[in-house]
View 1 (cartoon, helix red, strand yellow):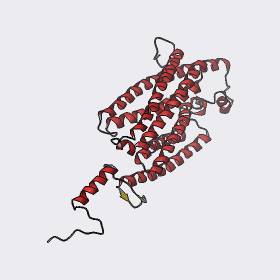
View 2: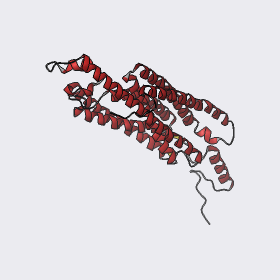
View 3: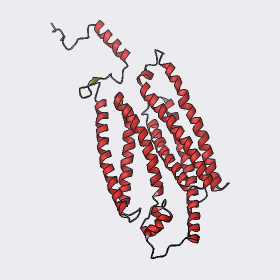
Length: 334
């Protein structure tokens, strides 16, 4: 039995409070990408060339943040309804979505602290904010999980009082009594509750749609930074599918034949997604090989210098007589 993480109130009231805090926090968070529209004015300034170079990437991330926070606000409302109606499925949906956000915030914190965004101190502030968010969200997940366990115990007690299955009846009859809790039926041989993973799978698929759109834009714009989110997300998905296949084959979800077939499907997912990761990784390495890559079909600009800087360097070299084209060799030394 899990301890009550809300000693000053009931678990149901605590979950409602979590939903309210999440809703208010997400409304405040949505204000940030909206105010980021002011970056568009900076393009007109001559000293803001880095904004022009990274404009596409910045706008993609701003739109992604806006979409995620909007979904988080909707999920906060779903959690409140789940607490009010004592609906376990709605509570699990919120946990699955929030777990994905915790994972993304953890990755953001690691990248920010490692200095991958740059050497400026201002990039550490988002990292610290993400760390605080991870701590609070983890506590909120613990509160909602304790509430779900409490509801499960009450449902089991009520089921034992009202419904009983004779030893001679089939396992299918027991499954029909509670189809959302497949792994908890000992007569089916299950050891793990499959409901959280099923809910997490749907949330994970929704996140996969977002990163797939980002990958398409990255391939179209030939932007390696926009390809990495899909690569990291797919790597996590491959690990999850492989673990799910092992649980299906070992009977952790039950002894039904259809569950073993699901394990075969998980292995196909691992194989296909691994190949797609190889393709995307090869494309990223192709983009990073240099400013001139014949396989890309285009000539890209050097990432470390802006176009105006390169133009000034060429003019300076030509003025000093140090610039020669490929068709004009250097004069012999006398």
